[in-house]
Length: 101
Length: 184
Image 1 (cartoon, rainbow over the protein chains, first blue to last red):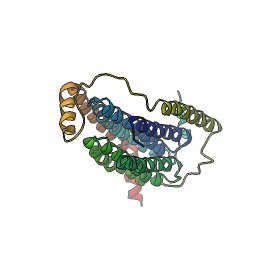
Image 2: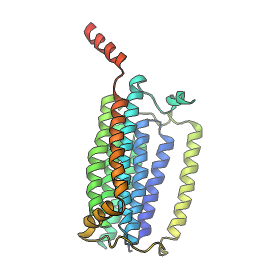
Image 3: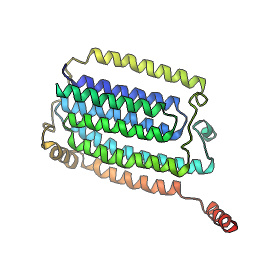
Image 4: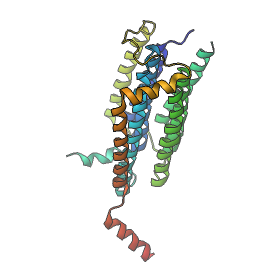
């Protein structure tokens, strides 16, 4: 059996689905952030697979930018979490419904 | 043959880690499982000759982001086990089921077309293989995407400032905390 691009796409899609499902069923904000990372990694894998298939380095460039944005997202997300949990220890995503306008 | 073996083992590592992230009750275990998934992805990157990205994946993701996660978990003391049953609203379970089911259907369609050749744009950046990988990536970054690259530096500065502002203790609570310590 030869590994074609499609297999990498399937693996990336599976990671994306697992991450999205986790985002929906988990209530711990920290774990939800980790699930977002899982989804981003699934997409990164697809980008690299296409970069190889199409023989175009542009896909890897996009992955590089995704890495940077993911790092920034985690920094700001964890900063928000620290601020929220200091005010309300043990808060879950449900407890933050007070943020509704 | 070796390629197939590497793919299967790395894919198993990735999926085990991913399932571990969403099923572990303790956030610390979730973070460690996330490291496992990220290493699996790095192996897949090497298998596809994206050597630079594999290195960055290990350094930035496993080295920096997960450490940040663990740091916050320990700092806030939220490493209590979470009861998965109690924490789920009924509608969320259905939403997750619909999401996962629909996505898996799409995945099935994807598997059907796996062997179809992908039609796409012609290569513009040249081949992405061999030792040329880093050079090609650098050329792409600093020529075609140089403005986006500069903007990412701006984004990182904004993120750092935002994190400092968000995580800083407000003045009032700070002085109150000092008084508390003084009382003790």
